Length: 145
Figure (cartoon, one colour):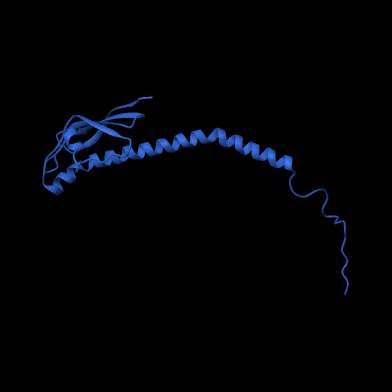
C-alpha cells in the first residue's frame, strides 16, 4: 500500500490566516472603541448603583408604618434618632441624611409627615412623607456637581 501526497493542493490558493498587520489594525480598532465607550459604561453603572441606593432608602421610608405597627411603638425620625445605634434608617456608605422636619409615625402606622434630605456628594434628594401612609414624595432633586 502506498500513499501519494501532493505538494500543491489546488483547493488552497493564497495564504491562510491573518497577517500581523491585519491583527494590529483590528486590535487598534477594538482598543479605540473601548476607550470611547468605557467612560460612558462606568458612568451608567455608577448611576444605577446610586439609584439602587436611593430606592433602598425609599423602601425603608415606605416601611416605617409597618415597623411602628409591628413594634407597637411610635417612631420619631429626627437627626438624634438617625445617630442612634438602632437607627430606623440604614444608608449605603457615602450617604448622609438630615431631617429638617421630623417624621412621626404612630404605633397604629398613621404618619404625620416630615422631610428627610439625603446626599451622596453627587445628588441631594429631599423626600417628604405624605400623610397618612408615609408615602414618600420627591420635593427636590439637585446635583451638587
